[in-house]
Amino acid sequence: MIDNLQEKLNFLYRNGKELGESGDTQQTINKILDEIIAITNSDQGYLFTISEQHELIPYVLRRNTRENIPLEQAMIPQRMLETILATGEPVFSQDTQTDKRFTSYMSVQAFHIQAFLCVPIVVFGNLMGILYLPQITTDHTFTWEDLELVESLAPGIGLLIDNSRLQQVALEKGRMQHEMQMARDVQESMIPKNVPQYTGWKGAFCWQPAYEVGGDFFDFVPVDDHTLAVVIADVSDKGMPAGLFMALSRTILRAVLKSHGSAAEIITRTNYLIHQDAQESMFVTMFFAILDQKTGVLTYVNGGHNPPMYYERKTGKMTPLTPTGMALGLEPYISYEQKQIHMQKGDFLFLYTDGVLDAVVRQKPFDEVELQDFIHRHRNADPDQIVAMLREYLCGERKEASSHDDLTVVVWKRTADEKDLK
Image: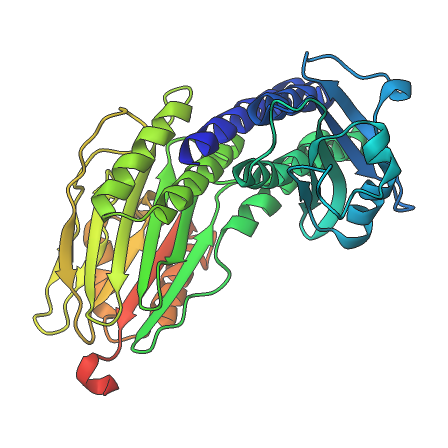
């Protein structure tokens, strides 16, 4: 499934860039639908949009020969599509001749449909269309992996459709403004809204792109009831290209994380897949950690990222967690070393991107020495207070502070140890 995902992401990323450059949405969607038909071994592929009156409108009709299907030759099972329109749920049958749900559907029988996938296209909670893939011949049927693949592709297709609509509006209001806002909305939807809650731990974050779309991202991914994956990363470019590459990197990492493995194994696999899709020498620095919140053991890999600061309350020592490997996407085969720290009560981790060190405050650069001094001064504060004070210090007075890079900070602190929780 990971390999299929890689192929899918590579295709969407490539055509997403093509869309932004050419503006030919119809041609791009034709290519994507052709690819879906090929990946799933479908005979045909139909993409419908939904009108304001909640009616289905044929948008793209394609054969497996990469040709359009004339509307009068289209095999459209209206009753089945109306079911999805009403429920918003996917419909999937591996054999319509024995599937009792569809033996009474006259259109299914009349068109000799042997199997089919029918998936709703939902963007930001709104049903925007339906993707329908029929299998007419009997030498292939669909699998559950096919369904999962098509479902995961559907939102990307929806964004392309939505982009097409926005392009029409952009003729009057300015195309770039709308495209950037859409990309910003999509990117914001990928950024955590809240900090995961674990007894004995507190966290806080700040995410502030310098442009409408940025290349910084962070993520919290629960692995199980007591284990949390934490990541912060920074893409090499700026603006829209960085935003696209950020979304690609985050999606690949989350997919690889589902396959489990050590922190080093996860980043090694993620690097390989990102390299397969990296274009124009783009790369991403990434700090990835797996935290056992019961024991306080944090296992991490630093792929060329700014060293997070680890503060130990007992000793008052501040330790930079320096890189254990190069940035992701530069080379396909890289071995990453993983290291561990044991966080005790009062210890905290300060993660950041280079936008923090690129800031200029009162005409002085805010460098690593300044950062360590700031952390030390506020070592007894809660994470949300640390983040708020840093943000105010760097960004509160625009006339006195400036930054030409994204600003992202995550603070994770242990507030109680095992004996306190017993």
